[in-house]
Length: 196
Length: 293
Image (cartoon, rainbow over all chains, first blue to last red; front, side, top):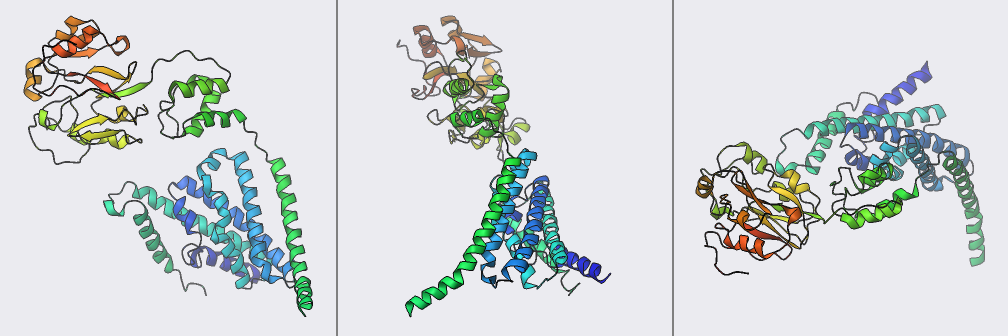
């Protein structure tokens, strides 16, 4: 019961309170770049969720079972990047095979998941928060992906409606998107302090 | 001393290097297996067709871009020839890739604006201060007297991706050097003034007016409109007058003495040349000169 409680709290925390996009400002590039249409945003969110879950789990395993055992924590960054790049390659192949249209619409943003700082950030945060339980690491990684999906889908929904709005000429395009992102972050600040 | 340092560095470095090597090769093997399992067969012809296309992504073919057009052509060879900027040359290349033979599709099409009235030549009933697009202005009756002529906002030049269309003194003017014939402007014009014409000559003769009003009312609205007098049609049968408007049969057009005479005799000077090196049109209001060609 206690474990379940911790896992649930961790999940809610990473999705709402410590959302990587809203509070840590990680992964802004795809957050602004692929949030034009809601179906594409959802696909991007799922791809990121897959990559972040896979790489979060793998990096925890590598970190705790290999690197810490032989005292090579300094090579963490390089190893993590290696894992993420491999996972992204895997996702790319999978999408190309089974969802060609999604693969087309992602374009350059799919290989760019490799450099999505939300993913590397999460892997490093797991280490920083001293998560020493594999299950917890898996749940946190998955939660981070869900949080990212939620953020990008909210953004895409707003931007789809913004297309119909009468935005002043000087704010059209990127400016109104950045203002929206700022307001969304402010809104999500309201969750801060819910769980410590 | 230095040697000892080097040895120490080596002793610290080799486990790290070995770990990275081990991890790297593990991932490499995993990815290798995945790439074999998830292999996608791509027809090399798609790449070849894409090579042959101009890669402008203008959308004239009706597809999202050159890449999707290349894929569509492979599936359905009847789509050859949809690439307007590439023209017959590109069609030939695509046909060669697909081992097909295409029949001659005729000269490349270029847009002709069927109006020659500049702001000074037109009659306006009121000043239009609404949304500055032709589509909006067209929805409002009677701002500009002529219901057929160019409105002079920039719907067509906004649609042009090649900077080949400009509004000069209230008239859309095609820059034939830059035009690729992508048909975007002719789709954008709310008054359907822009017609895609097969340019069999470098400069095509045209009747630059679309007014179907009677001669008298055209005269009252525009200094340079076609009044449907039929003088041109008497010279040669490539001109035809229908609904008070002369039209040139572009397919039949050859530069002959008769067409030149028709142009010179036109009382309003609405018959003129359009093209890459078109001679300047007669000044509006000026009487036709008696000199022959």
